[in-house]
Amino acid sequence: MGPPDADEMRLGSLLAVVVVAGAAGAPASARGDETHAELAGALGVGAFGARPQSTFDLGVDLARGELAVGLGARLRLVAGEGAREEEWDEPSELVRILRHASYRGERVAVAVGPLAGVTLGHGAVVAGHTTGLHLDHGRSGAHLKADLGPVRAEGVVDDLVAPALVAVRAAWTPRSSLSVGVLALAADVAGVALDAEWHPRAWGALTFDAVLLDGVGSGLHFGGVLAHRGATLALEGRAGSDGYLPGWISPLWELERVEFGLEQGMAGVGQRDAAGAGRFGGLSARAQAAVTGTRLEAALAWEGRPGAPDLFTARLALPAWHDAQAAAWASGFVERGELVGAFAAELRVRLPSRLFVVAELGRLYRAGMDASLAPVVTAGVAVGAVLGE
Image 1 (cartoon, one colour):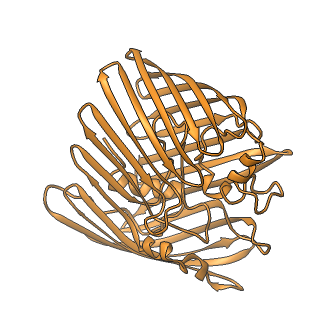
Image 2 (cartoon, rainbow, N blue to C red):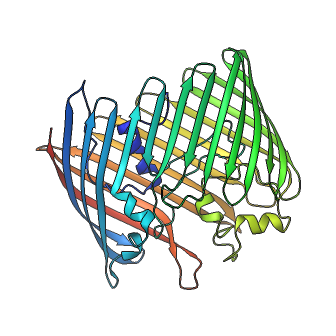
């Protein structure tokens, strides 16, 4: 149960493309009570927008029993700019030297680091939240889960130093076929939600959510989930009052909370501002298909957003593919025939003599000349080595 373990946390970092280890090798794996350590470094070349870039990564990973910790940093040099100090000039960014930390016990699990695809409950409020999309404002968050028998609790904070999002959810299972939950949100809006899930059959469930976002609006969600051998299909219908946006904390929330619509000419108009103008509200729907296995994880979601373009999100992970690992993530929408959003992909291949090569590709955002968000495509290839056990 719980948040990802050491290997999964590292792969989650790839999906968020905020892993300062970037090319710093895999975390050490622990067996029993032995302590294992790995030191890794890599040099890379590529492009930062239209300019050449070079990167240097250095990291160390420690693991003992259920605990894993990774430290490290990336230095990015861009032609004509020099070292990108914007990536390390805030207290929240300095904390990213702690690349990841995780503990996975029988009843409690916690993961610290970049957040990737965090969903609480059915995703009525927090749906696929991902950090690391703003290159000039990196942060490390925390994701906690606790299993206390009939009661399960889950919480997330997006920034350990200056949080913009804190959300907690507790669920009670009075019967094996029924669970009810309550969620509290503190972000650019405050909110509460009640949810229920009924399993009339082992392969299916019916879901219900009632959401109230203070000063924004309220909504009702009705849905169903089919599951069979690692494959799931979820369908949901929504109805909301004026100003209500389902899945308020979306995969692009880190960007849209400060500039809703990204490249739609709405610089300085955040998601809360758009809601206050009555842009949202009405009927909508959501669909998601996912496959989860030991060698493959994939998910594709479509979300109707009344008053805003429909949002698409895709995720693919190959955590164990011979001597290679791969991960890709994308979220965006189509506006005026143009695809807008963010994506990232990374391929890591182990070479002989404890060497490795990493290829990265992403479309993220940085601060523009007029203080708006400007998209930038980054690409790179790095070669490194691992020392240690």
